[in-house]
Length: 143
Image (cartoon, helix red, strand yellow):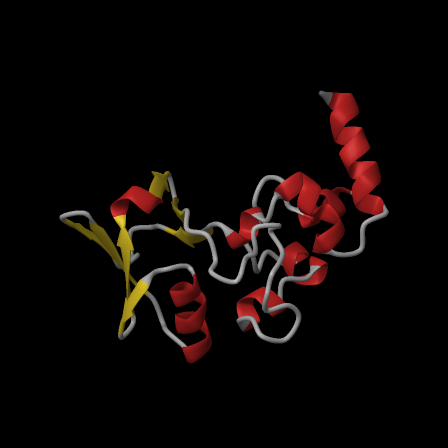
């Protein structure tokens, strides 16, 4: 297993964007998103819907709607079957509508939400994004 990690680290060193990394991650970040959950989080489960209240912008609303999430004012209405609760984290597994069958973004580079445009190694290192396990930036941070 150590040999595989070294190989991936070496591959990450030569990769300067997500397009060359899709073989490893298969667009994980475009198929799920996360919310930190704590004592003050505004999360409620009713019937089969998880409601999450967050500060909403037009761009964020667009992002969530691309993932097939209904947005009512500042509340996301997420089917419970798409949610995974782990200590401190709610992960939502919904594929972005901009993804092609080849896991490429049909909105790249300019016709996609800012949250997607702003994912950079620098922002990832600052902890501004929850990175998926196979994300290129996980490996880039190790270099």
